[in-house]
Length: 147
Ligand code: SME
Image 1 (tube, rainbow, N blue to C red):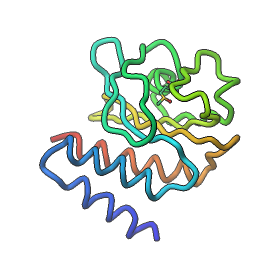
Image 2: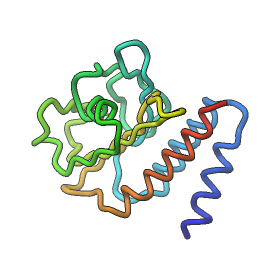
Image 3: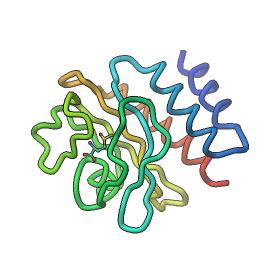
Image 4: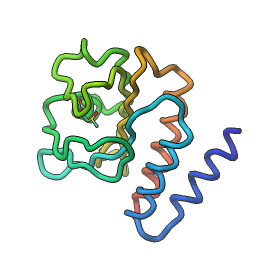
């Protein structure tokens, strides 16, 4: 399944318009990944993370880079899984039904430009196989964002 899955994602990303590519990517991830209630992008603008294309409920538009799981992933420069967001100090609850969160940074030439954020109602939700999948997804998206 995986080859076809990533090929499908590549096809969606292979769209000249970056915004259109990211909108369909968010929809594709939301449709194909079990048990998630939100998936989307935040991009660094100044000292904030600003909301990008997403699927799910209305979300926080701007996040500071010193608070929350998304900011933590940016500062840690790596994928972060939080099994229980209620135990994560500083977690920002855009949707208070969310229980678990995975955030993976998007990098161009080793510079972090934003994150892909995934939320779930399950407690916990994200396993090693999800981490592996989202590392690849983030790499494919990051490659697309170069141009
Ligand atoms: N929970 C995130 C904020 C973004 S929403 O989950 C969509 C955080 O703590 O950074």
